[in-house]
Length: 111
Image (tube, rainbow, N blue to C red; front, side, top):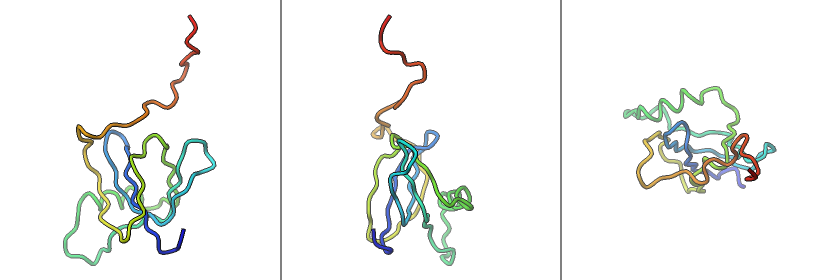
């Protein structure tokens, strides 16, 4: 991973699809989680402000490291340049798989 790399992560969170950009993405020590560090947002110098991106900036304002469950991730791309972070509604063509990864008291199938 070079210092110039930027990764685009698309994942589910509370019924919505989040698209964020970060400089560091790796498998964490917590089983089943991907760690995301150094989140990258657009410059505030631009005249046009995207409310979705502003909401994400506020939500992740003091966050140093995000642990995202592996089964919530739709895709991770290494991109040439940063885009606009956004939150959108999950469409009919997007489904979380597998769901759920672990079911409490799931049993062994014996009856």
